[in-house]
Every structure is written in C-alpha cells, then in structure tokens.
Length: 131
Image (cartoon, rainbow, N blue to C red; front, side, top):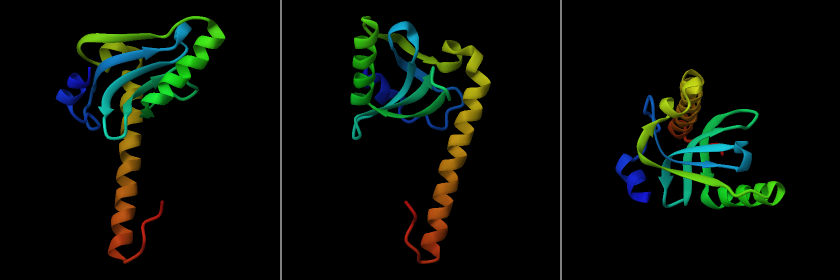
C-alpha cells in the first residue's frame, strides 16, 4: 500500500485525485477515501465522508485506529478496509460528490494559498508569521 501512495506522490492539486485505500467504520457511518500517505507525519490525506461537513484533510493513522476501536466497541462490528486493486479516481467511487469535492478542494487550496501569501507578506515586512 505504501508503494502505491509513494508512486502517486502528492495529489493536492489533482482535479480528480486517485484513492488508494478506503477505511469505513462499522455501519459505514464514516468513510475515509485515502489519496496520500505522509510517512514523516504518519498520517493519511484524503476525503472524509459521513461527518456533518464532508471534507478533505489529514488524519493521523493512530486517530483512524482510535475511531474504529470506539465505533467497534459501540456497534460490536469490525471495521472494513478496502485495498483497491489500482488507484481509482475519487469521482468513480463517490460520483454524487464530484462537484462538492472539487469545490471543497478549491476552498482548501485557496485557504492554504492565502496563508502562504500572508506569511510571505509578513516576512517581506519583517514581521513574524502568525500561527
């Protein structure tokens, strides 16, 4: 699995990022569509579906394990992990979310770019960047 993530590299600017693996909680209340694995941070990046606000983001591997453990204790069912035979565009896995996914990714990228611009502006003005 790590090799597939490594081969794809960063997909943060991909129009339709490819999912390598899917983690689902029992009852499929939550689904994590993982598009990247960041080994240094030991975290995944992908799309989380099933929350009040479906969104893109990073989640540490141990947080996923903790979520599954709590959900398993409550439901008595085990989690599922789907290792895809090949990386698959997220729009093929979640077609109803193609447009919202693209909008959410754009918003996330715009926020990141705005933060970078603010940091560059602060550095140009000789100020410490805000955290």
